[in-house]
Picture 1: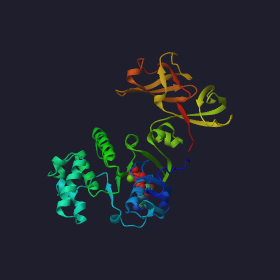
Picture 2: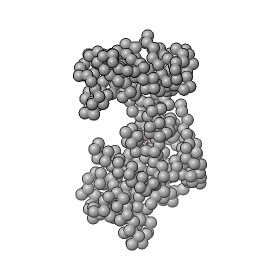
Picture 3: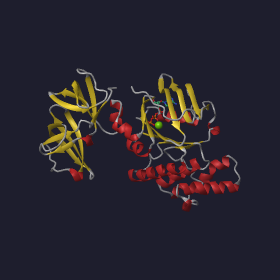
Picture 4: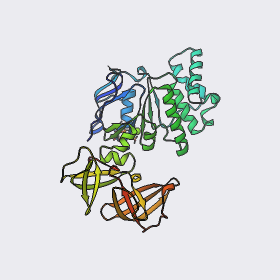
Amino acid sequence: MARSTATAPAGHGLAFRGVSKHYGIVRAVDSVDLDVARGEFLTLLGPSGSGKTTMLMMIAGFTAPSAGEILLDGKAITHLPPEKRNFGMVFQGYALFPHLSVFDNVAFPLKVRRRPAEDIKREVGRALELVQLTSLADRMPRQLSGGQQQRVALARALVFTPEILLLDEPLGALDRKLRTEVQIELKQLHERIRTTFVYVTHDQEEALSMSDRIAIVRDGRFVQIGRPADLYERPATRFVAGFLGESNFIKGRVNGPAEGGFSYGTGGESFRQKASPVPAAGSEVLLAMRPEKIAVAADASIAATNRIQGRVTSWNYFGSDFHFTVATQSLGQLAVRCPAWRIKLEPRNEMQVWLGWDADAAVVVADD
Ligand SMILES: Nc1ncnc2c1ncn2[C@@H]1O[C@H](COP(=O)(O)OP(=O)(O)OP(=O)(O)O)[C@@H](O)[C@H]1O
Ligand SMILES: [Mg+2]
């Protein structure tokens, strides 16, 4: 399993040091290290029950770690009560006060902090401006759309200029189109205010499109941490390749080195793969290959390093893309995706096709 990497400058930002949370025999969070730089947008991405919310609750101070330390700018905050941490939180259900106006909802954290009335007016105005809701200040929550309610919840979490904003699946209740809109707004908001965001989701597209870095969580541990494109292009393990995007997996045996990589055999055929370091001849390798890296054509005209024939067993049209499942002799079923504008064949089930991919189309991954 890949080790998590710390990229934040030491002592500046938020850090986990050997943090665990055990509930009886359940290791919800299992001895993790993490560094989040000040101003960073870090996403915790993982399946249900992997420990994401537990990590967030420990940052917020609502859950005490069973072991380890949580540091802010190098100082332990592990046992500091939540109200002394000055972190904002946004949850899935927005939880606005139904009997308070938008203005009063956003003003609430400042009233709790006993701030003077003129400060409250100014700060609420500023927060509503940030989320572009100035004109709706007098509305009641029930008079708002889901996306607008979510933005009120955001304004309420930002109004006291928190050092860190914690967001736990904040867009989960929104439909797909609205979700995409609020994703873009959230990212722009982050770029403007540069508050540290720790964002929890199990939506991989959301993680890819918004984050500076993504930490992939599995069974209470980090399996890989990196920038979205690095994780997508170079997943370290089968789990990461399958969880972040879709992948075909190919098992083969290394024949030996071949320009910039190696050649491997599987199902009676040989293919070439770029790699560094080159795995030893005779060893077993597991490769992950994204469906969009495979070209499909009705004839053998594809110019690619690796080519095989196959038979279309299913295909779907998605407007922007075609998705194919192609049965092959040597590699079994392969998922293939092709932009609709580029496709030069009329898809039919059972049709014979050629598939082609270059030597850098796949990556070697660890089998976990
Ligand atoms: N208070 C608790 N008591 C006992 N077990 C708990 C408690 N809270 C969480 N767990 C367990 O800890 C593990 C991690 O839970 P957590 O809520 O952190 O997962 P998650 O990644 O947020 O999942 P989801 O995506 O479903 O929200 C789960 O196995 C869960 O059942
Ligand atoms: Mg959760």
